[in-house]
Image 1 (spheres, rainbow, N blue to C red):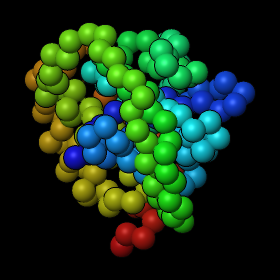
Image 2 (cartoon, rainbow, N blue to C red):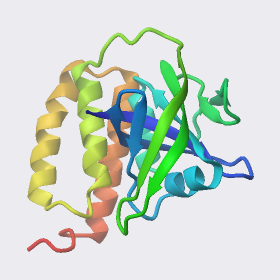
Image 3 (cartoon, one colour):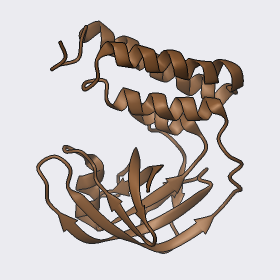
Image 4 (cartoon, helix red, strand yellow):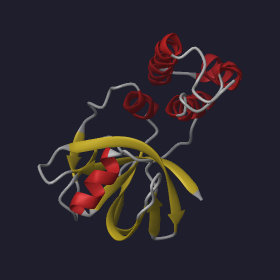
Length: 192
């Protein structure tokens, strides 16, 4: 199963990086497969640790994809790192095995500590729409514009019907990013 979460990782100098990512959940072991180049990959290889943060604040997903990464952090409990201060839950991870790959290396991690901080009340349709739009934004360079436009048109329905302030802000950031990308890339590379 793949879970959409937010990873916090850090280098030996203590600089924390926040990145949304699909993580393969294998029970108490997790497979992290970042595309190269990746700050998350570099940080985990350097320190051997990372944190999975579960959040319903979709601004974090949208923000990371649009150059906004200034979200509140706090110390972890068992490892020397940082997690999202507003996380509903977090899992502290230790790297146990690494498999090199030219495009997507495999980082096998095990949970060394898990904690719940708030109740997850479920996603509304707007939150789902923002998450899906964030995934589209992460793949703008790979997808044809027709697919992007069709997906956004459908996802906008959920935003229009159920969004609160957070979801509207996140949606705006993503739509702004798509507009900026479109100005410099009339049609993504490799698409005819």
